[in-house]
Length: 145
Image (cartoon, rainbow, N blue to C red):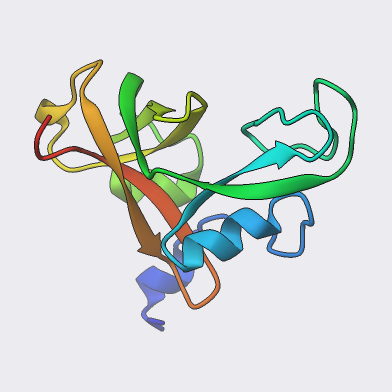
């Protein structure tokens, strides 16, 4: 970690709450380079984002299933103004909505050349470690897309 005045003045990027029981299994899987989603153990409904109760049957128990870390770019937006000051150094950045091969949709930052982004193009997940505890899922246009 840098101790330069510039680094000290820079706002810290928000990190997930790893103690949150609703999302902890997701973050544990991303540390291992796996993409997982919850499935209700009562009715079988698969959901994203994770919630404390199944939106279909109100059951509170979920099994986490590994899904293919790939999908199709469904939509995207390029941000020229940071919604959080901590991201100002990344401007412009692209946020994509990816339809996973399992059918769920997941938002995430897009990596690579923005010129490669085309709605309907295949994308693959990238697992970017922030530290020993947190790994974020990012997305990139698939090489064969």
